[in-house]
Structure formats: C-alpha cells, structure tokens
Image (cartoon, rainbow, N blue to C red; front, top):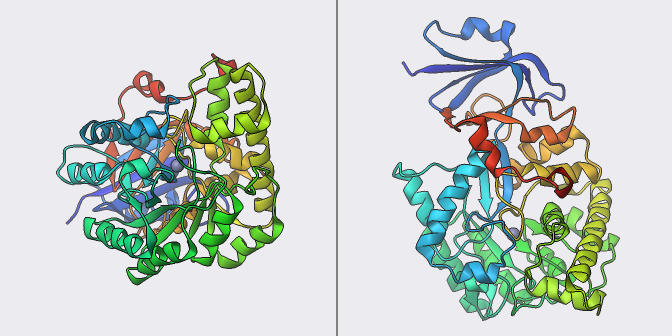
Length: 443
Ligand SMILES: [Zn+2]
C-alpha cells in the first residue's frame, strides 16, 4: 500500500468551492490528491500510519502557476541582448538557481517564455536525473523570431513559411511543450516593437503545425498589428497585449479587445515588469533596458536628463497598461497571471506582484488567486492536472501565513511548499528573505 500524507490548515482555499473551507484538509498518495474537504468530514479516511502536516494557523492554497517566466534571467536590469551573449552552460546553471527560487516562493508550475537554445531543456533533463529541483516546467525550447527580431539572439531566427515550419518541427523533435513566437519587436536592440515581425503566412505555418501536434501557442505583442495577426493565426495567448499603433500612440481599442474575447485567447498583460523598472529607476539605477525603452524615451522627451526621461516613460507606460488591463477585465477577457520575471528588473520569486496589479486593475482578491492558480492552469492546458485542490490532481500546495482573500499581497507569505506530494525543504525564514523584492519606499 502506498504512503498516505495529510495536510491540515486553518483555512483551505481549494479553487473549487467559492468559499474557503474552515479547518480544511487534503489527503494525498503517490503525488496525487485522493480526498479534500473539512477535516471532520474526511478524517475517517485518514489511516493511522499517515504522515500528518498540521498547519493549524495557516492557509492552504493550490501551488501557484506562473504562465510567463524567464529562468535564464537575472532580474537586475540587464537587457535580453546581454543575456544572449552569456554561454549556454552558465545560463543552465543560472536557471537551476532561479528554478529553486520559483519553487520556494510557492510557484509549482511555470511556463518558460523564451530561453536561449536548449538551456531549459537541459535543466529539465537535470531535474529528471535528480540533479536539481524545479517547478513543473512547460517549455518552448527557444522563441521563434524573425532575423533581428525580438529574442532572435536566443537561437530561433527564421525567414518565410518554410523555415518557420522547419523550426516548429525541430522544436517538436527536441520535445517542447508549446510554441512562443515574437509577433512584434520588443526590447531587443535590432527589433521594431511597433511593427509586426512575421507575415501572416509565417505565423500561420507555426500555428497550423502546433494544432497538428496539439500544442498551444503564445505570441509576444507590443503593438496592435501583432495582436491582430496573432488572432487571425489562432494563437492561444496574447502576451503583453499593448494597444499601440505603429506611431507609438497607445490607445485602448475596443474592437480588437472584442476580437480577443471572441477568439477566446488568454491575455497575459505583464504589468509588474514595468513597475519593477520604475522602482529601479526610482532608486537611481540607470542602465538602458534596450531598444523598447530607448524608443519610448526618444518619443516622449528630448530632455537632457536621460534618467528623468526614462522615469517619465516608465510611469506613463505603467499607467496606460493598468488602464487598458482594467478595461480588458471589465470586458470579461481571460486575463491571467504571468509574471515575466526575471526579465529586466523583475527578479524571480515575486510572482505575487503581477497578481497584485491584476487586483489593482479590477479583479477581486478571489479572482486574483484564480488568475494564478486554476485559470492560469487552464491557460496552459493543465486544467486537469494542477491549479486546484481536488481529487486526481497533482499534490501541489503552498502554505501561507496570511490569507490572500484578505489582502492579495499575502500570496507572498509562503511558509511551506509541496510539489507532486513532496514536502520541499526551503531552508530558514532568513535565507528565504533574500529573494523578496520590495518597493523603494520600504528600503
Ligand atoms: Zn517575457
């Protein structure tokens, strides 16, 4: 008979029942949940030899799901271009370090949004050989880009429908789980954020092949033409979703938002990566983030003080994005949490900051938790495996000191983590403080 484990908590937010369950408990065996509910109601199913974890003052939630991570990244403000210059071996080791941080922060599933070459595939191999620990990883191998396009330096540059199809097939051969495509330029110095990168035919070649193999697709879109082309190609998730025209004017476009709703695509607005930038600039840190920021600064101001101009651009961009996100949430679009850490200044281990801004944009605390658990799981095609505490799902849990339904920031009060039924040894509270990212005014 397999070993039985039980977690008891003061409150369980299972993401199945709308109301939290007082004195909640979950029973799991072989990494899978077998029963959950109020402790008194299920206690007769607990065997005498079961391992009991009693968190009587704490809150039990499903392990969090972050739809957008960059485990190759450093989160210290350096650009993607400079990460592209680092050797693959070093990036794999950095990713292993980051993966631990992600897991310790209560994130038990991640979707990686564009690492260099096969660095993350190598990390997965290492995890499978017992050499490293990491959250469950949904991998794209490397992003699909045009020559000089956003993230092309990570090894996936193509031209024309034939090469786009060829890279798609190569990625399938390498064992990827989904395709990430950069449908517009981005922070990459040689790219054009306000222009679509791929032609419709190139995009279609990738999404058709994805459909043939039952894979999902996601596109990086910093402007409206890229969003529109992506929707025409049947892309499943729009990342960033900036409503910019090709002159750099950012104005919410209800028609395009309606099209996103009609197509059923998920939206990952990536709000905190801009706020993290703002915090760094507030603290006087001033390295250039790359092409996107430089373009913004030159568009918005010709002032001599570059730091000030960057600060203004970052503030305006964050305000605009929050406003547009609010409108998308009001329209009922499927907006989920995807942190974009460790891109730019947003260090991994702080996924809750993105959820916090989705709540600021209009989600209730409960909807916020949904956006980083069950809804994020569904966006990744993992709705039957993770994202809620119910029979048959993976025993992935985060134990929180404080209730996120009282304050969404409490998602950061993680004290214990379980992945596939395994209790993760996170180290002392003191050591776990080292990855907590805080606002400048708290320094
Ligand atoms: Zn990203």
